[in-house]
Amino acid sequence: MSLTLQVISAFLLDLILGDPRPYPHPVKIIAKLAIAFEILSRKLISNQKIAGIVTTLSIVLISYVGVYSIIYQLSTLHPFAGIAGSIFFIYSSLSIRSLFDESLPVYKFLKEAKLPEARKSLSNIVGRDTEKLDEGAIVRATVETVAESTVDGVISPLFFACIGGAPLAIAYKAISTMDSLFGYKNEKYFEFGWAPARLDDFANWLPARLAMPLMAAGASLCGLNGSRAWTISCRDGNKHPSPNAGIPEAAIAGALGIQLGGISFYSGVESRKPLLGEPLRRTEIPDITECHKIMFVSACLALTLFTGLLQLFAYF
Image (cartoon, rainbow, N blue to C red; front, side, top):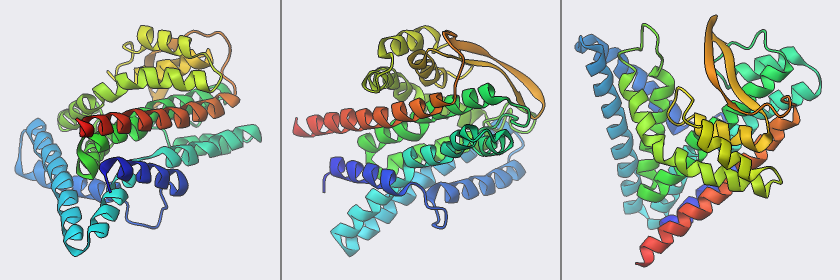
């Protein structure tokens, strides 16, 4: 089976199954390994930035070589076993269905006017404080999270899977996982988390910019304002503190005609992010559903583009 068919199979599998909680997800294994390496490297290396670099490069290398080795060993048993292993790991790198499943409860609780439950569900998918958020702020946080995750949970893994198959897709997830674990600008991780944060920025740089036309086209196909999504993404995408997160958030803001960003609190500390988009109207509960639609359509467009290019290069 060609890599193209493997990626398509993994994509469909993710849409159908999502991330069942009982099975040992590779990302969970990578996270435990990264934490173990953090403890060891901090003990052995006094310079925390170097300790972070060593940990980051080690986990990425182990992830790549480990998956490559597993697939190779499975292939020696039976060619189909190797293909199945490759599909499994690519599927594990994608988060399309889980992104939808984890943000949907927020929407449902808001529809039922259950703000405490909506805040609690939101706290499972965002790092900001949610206890005092009103309805509009909950919607804004959910939309921002789905928009940003459309890149690092969907477009980026597809991009790397098409370039280097399952090993590179999982190596990317290792980078993303370590950024989530260590990429904080606090006293504990300011030095140690420098390497995973910078490597994550580098890995997502091109996929985030490919997301601009993909999400603008996705918005148009969903009956929203695709041209404004493109314009706002170009205008405001670079305002965000992250070199990549602002691009999909600005695209969604433009498509919906709302404004994202502003004041949030993290562990009681105020964080002011630049405003993205134009406040043509207030954020509303259905914005979450519209954001889901753009995410799904953009994912399908990314799959079509990347596998199409893969086939084109294979032909030549």
